[in-house]
Length: 259
Ligand code: 13P
Image 1: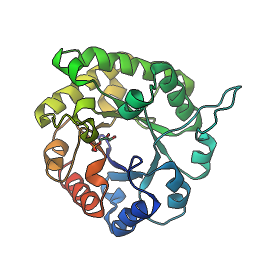
Image 2 (image 1 turned 120 degrees about the vertical axis):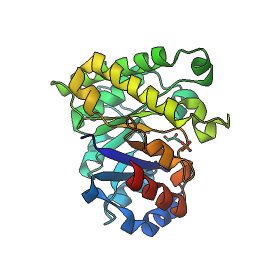
Image 3 (image 1 turned 180 degrees about the vertical axis):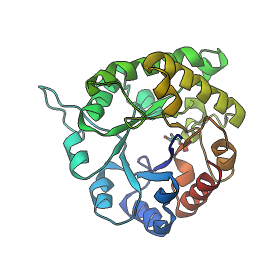
Image 4 (image 1 turned 90 degrees about the vertical axis):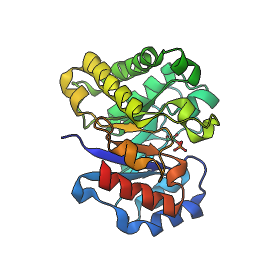
């Protein structure tokens, strides 16, 4: 039985006070006992403070640096995530690919660092609108997943479903992309099934069947139930829809009811 995960990411949209407000107002909504795992990805500056609070949510960083012979000013030290018990890290978010030119070389290093330190990457994959319309989605996702195969060698053993999460986020369906377009839930489900097939091919059947696949194309309180009910969608990575106390509560409720 695959685990179900919902992560609300605050991106750089919520300052410390707003982020605390969302968390404090939702303190009673956690549902780890029921098998529904809910987490928050606040900005880096909130992480240590959130780690010291009793709120019951998983914590995810939005980025991590890598250790090498050179220094990396401005990057997050993975050991700090470990010290604070932050178990997850979003990697390769499309906003970073698009606006910060994060390429496969950098993504591979970040992923490998997570694997070395026992932090579970939430690897974001997804195509642009042009690629979607040109029916290149499968080709793009295959290329993005190849980075994962190379990085997973850092584990020194076969990857299991407890090592990582994958979030399918069509770049054009993310709220900040400005396209105003969304992906129909059935098509999203079919693409998740195809991603499972690609993971099967790269890592073997067990991982393809067991890995939790999240959807992240602007899930919100109005559409969450539809996506969560799909058999190949194991939860969500949600931005704007969970960046308010009310949105966080509503999407969490739909996740627990339908996923
Ligand atoms: P929105 O939910 O705001 O579309 O953002 C999705 C996303 O980028 C999650 O990583």
